[in-house]
Image (cartoon, rainbow, N blue to C red):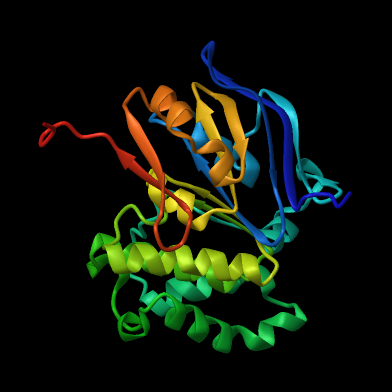
Length: 262
């Protein structure tokens, strides 16, 4: 059996006696998009931080392929995984192009550094910010800053990509483009994990879904198998309908609303 690109076993994390994650197992496979979903406080961002190596778990282990996460040097880790955090605003007056170029830092003094300029230009194009390349990043809107941060991650060209709510500040067209980009990275062989709040987008764009509730995995598998009305309604404490999309056949996730109920 092929080892997943990123895997964690028995992950628990506690702060001041409060357990935020409890015995979590998760695998992120190459060639797929894994969505991590769950209500506020479920532990999604904490889990992503542990997978990234930014947070040390209280118990459990994380591996990148055959290597333990803790055995990988900082420079090598930066080449093997890239991370987009929820809060990714830049406080200093760099241009957008300079911010995106920061994604190439891990590749300095390597053979791949020769392609830096072309890679940065491609990342700007993929995130639709070529026209913003010369702008001071602190003058951008929240959505534009989010796309610049994503471009930096894309420019990093790592085989594992971890994204924490990458669509939160974006309009619908750019939300869809970001999720399409995630799918393209996976189709090219990348392993992509995304923390998401939009359940319908998760059902549409993810190949694998992990549902967290109060720090524990309550379901994991293909969207059609685990994103059921019963499971989602219980986890989110709100009635949620799941129906088949008439065109794509994917699950269509709709919160029950009573305003116009008869």
